Length: 170
Ligand SMILES: [Zn+2]
Image (tube, rainbow, N blue to C red; front, side, top):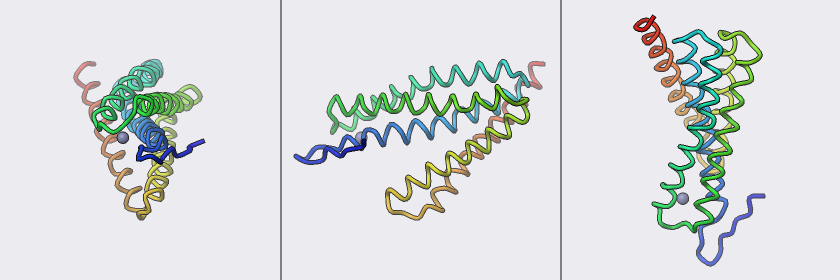
């Protein structure tokens, strides 16, 4: 599937797919998890959390896809086709990843859904980071821990903001 088109000095199409998927999946985990934790702490409402997850899945995926589109264009080395490949790969990856977080929210009560989501997010991020490190030939441990630390900061910050909002507005 990921056939490199390197040759003739071009940039491989694989680059575009890799950029889109790694960005879309990572952003899908971090953003959706932060939103889910924050909305849950702030509202304790399954409806609010579901609305947030679906909004992120669509609106933030479009936003990120456009961001990647512009950033790939700005590199000045990609063909139109490569830029659009990265754009669509970003949108699809983030959409799918964000939607996976709706599953525990639908099936479980909110507190359990938050715990399951954090575990799922940490797992997905670890697998992603592991693959990224291995594909670049660097040690996976430090990369995985670095990304998990960032995710933890996001989760703690989102939780605190949710609690703060809830204390101010209720
Ligand atoms: Zn690029």
